[in-house]
Image (cartoon, rainbow, N blue to C red; front, top):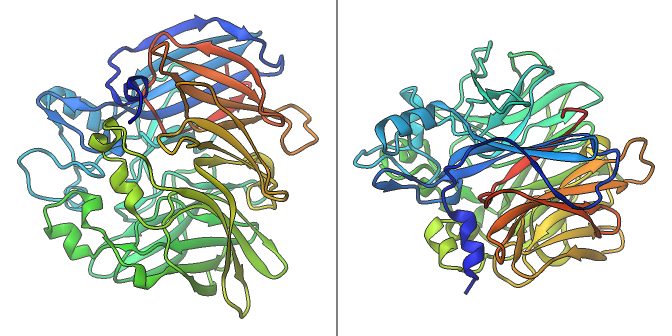
Amino acid sequence: MTSIGYLAGFETLDTETPGVELAWQGTPPAWLNGALLRTGPAKFEAGATAYRHWFDGLAMLHRFAFAGGKVRYANRFLQSGDYRDTVKHNAIARDEFATNRAGLLGSLFATRLTGNSSDNGNVNVLPYGEHDMVALTETPYPVRIDAKTLETLGPFAWADRLDCQVTTAHPHYDATRQLIYNFEISFGRKTLYRFTRMAPGSHSRSVVAEIETSEPAYTHSFGMSERHLILAEFPLVTKPLRLLLSGRPFIETYRWSPERGVRFTVIDKETGAIVRRAEAGPCFSFHHVNAYEEDGAIVLDLVAFKDARIIDALYLAGLRAGNALPEGLLTRFAIPLGEGPVTQKVLSSLTTELPRINYRRLAGRRHRYVWSAGAASGGFLDCLVKQDVETAKPATWSEKDCFPGEPVFAEAPNAGAEDEGVLLSVVLDGEKGRSFLLVLDAATMQERARAYAPHVIPFGFHGNYFANAA
């Protein structure tokens, strides 16, 4: 069983902090001037009703601003339509990933068709251009936020007419082409997988490729190399009619079908042509790490689970009961661009999730280091891991009764080495009953500094560091 301190990360935080200076313990690097922005669920009940899954809680934004050797913290609920409706009615107002509105039959898909879809951006926060910072979830309704004040500015208004019901909260930015790529699914009589691209600052997507499918797979992220986009269809699939008519929450309409294996589709970024289709044995993944081209093949790293039980393990009842998480392993697939079978190997025996790389420099290119949150004790995430994929040697950081989140890499100015910089992770200190921002040397995994927040910050998912944005 897990300690009581760990469970505090799944309790509602009602407090909003307009801005408070935190005290450093230790000394962060002098060049750390900018802001770490994060989002995650922070409200797990609404009146007499409660959300069922970690992915469902209402979003809260968190900001750690660094300037002149000081750090300030602020947090604020994302004032999405979802949040406003739920607070207004004091009950869950919109269907979520694994929670339907009380007393109503339907599904997340059905509500999207009626225009009352969730815009609960609790998964990721990133820029869609110089003037549009957005909070994202797995629906095509980004919410604009002020990166300095955390004020909600309203919906990100698409200027195109592309219709879809599901998208990823992990779009890729191609720095060479200066384009944002994403993947989405348009359910219907003819269901389509769709890759899109958009210029930063634009509100209009264009189609890279569309692929028809009869059994769409649950897709949380996708791969991108310098020349290609990679779709991995894990064998967790649904049917559009089941989505529409089952009356079950969105994810509960999906079925594990291991006989399908994993189906890879490699798309040319420029032409949209299918370069390769290939298959491998069954597994499941939320997060791709990176992809690159080498020796006539796509090398694709991701965190792989044996099956989709990880989704069931993240229901709040099980998490609060201290149940152990299934094993997720950093895994590499090599997909030949010509003939030949897909090969697969495990890069680390440590259970990890929420992987990050030096994305600014190496997105779509060969990487050596992967940083992630790990589960060394077999329970919830309790350490940070740096994995050298060339030597297979890991380095870790951990502390008793401490539970870290995603390690966000911040590169040092004029860095030479790939790992020259720091990791920023929000850590729950179960003993003290508060969370702190941890600053680790990304090369050595040694602590540089920490700063305690005034309260527990509920466990979140993703965020990013923005230099010179304090």
